Length: 196
Image (tube, rainbow, N blue to C red):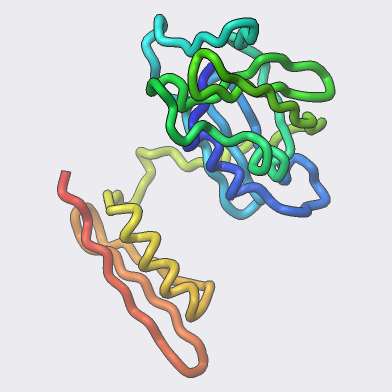
């Protein structure tokens, strides 16, 4: 199981100081990572790698599989960072060295000669059963493919005015509109779909 920076980015969705520890954590499964603060949730699958491509670090074997576990999101963000300039693409990933009841040990290596092992405390409890919250794709009212970076900028500017932004979908291949207001100002946005 190799996890990359996208898998680790789910920490941004975890709560900071929630009384339920599982909402302050990141869930690791053999095929994904996931985090939620109870309002928003992000799940990211592991990168698809050919079976013979695996970072080899002498004397630091990686686990090939494990049961789902949770670690503290804050500690993960602080201590585990994929290498910035790996010698090979496979070294842009992190892997799990060891799990026990109290901690998870992650391997971070930018090349075969250098590796660090970072231990993070495991979180007890059950991660929320989020699968039942995802609606069936067949029941979607509208589907729109947009440029995520442009959408993010638009939402950021509008949420600076008011955190409550109304998003309206008008159908497949139609633009979506965004609207927000305060007592003194209004903002209206439009996002064109990407034609695929």
